[in-house]
Length: 208
Length: 208
Image (cartoon, rainbow over all chains, first blue to last red):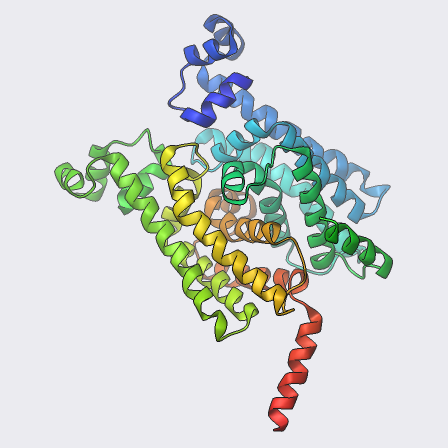
């Protein structure tokens, strides 16, 4: 599957044959057919795997909302989603590009995974607002923008590498990016952050 | 060109023929060949047109930085880029997807337009920090995240329509989105201290 993803990212989905994938992976083409049926089956499996894990990260963290604050719940989601994408950056790039196409598969995946993801993030943001941990803002826009920030480095890694000379696939980048998003959330979304917390954040940011 | 963009968005670039574009546009295929050479020529022209206008919006606003505050300069860029994408939403979607591919054309366009765009936005953010209008943050991350927020509704309009039932191609959406980004900027980036200084300065000026 790694072989398929790297070929799809260079040649595009249409430009990659099952034979080329088999060659790249060093396996027999029949093995791919046996497991996935055909190229479309492989594509579906790749997207489902990625989106299922992505959505599970959100859901698992949301389930702990009864035990922890909305802030720490959101922090876990941000951290885990960025780390997950960093670890699977080839796949992340491929899936983020594929979901921008108008196809029956994409619409189905949206209904199954992306609506679920939105449901949990939105419910979390609403809970945070109700508990007065978060400011009263338009939930939909907060969720859309948070998703934009979380996916950007992994949907456009090449842009970030070539234009900013930063390396989204490296651990170092993720650590800095998490801090930056956390700072964004604390200024924009979180209510009444204590002075000591703000000092800590300032230190973190100035250490960059 | 509208015909080409709408076919590319549904069938993908590889799945669309020059003949299909000519049929959709109601013109002779030879006319397309005459103007653009071939499909690759048409693709290049579409991407160059979009990115040139996009980058010009940033550059034109940046040039006025000597006359206006960094905040108002940034506000103009945000507003104009969102309105531009809304008016050309089919093209925007296509170009934002194409630039995620690994190709020679994309690398060239990045060097020509996206580096220029980043240069002006970053110079503006740095100027704002120097003037103490903006807080001291990591410039690169501010520029990357701002770009993520500005392009998201137009790179993933289908996601936003199907999952949030919002319509990024409508005037109404743009107005709300601009306000939300402006709020994000004012909480996250703008310096409160400089605002009160500005007030003081305004008082001094008005007392004279």
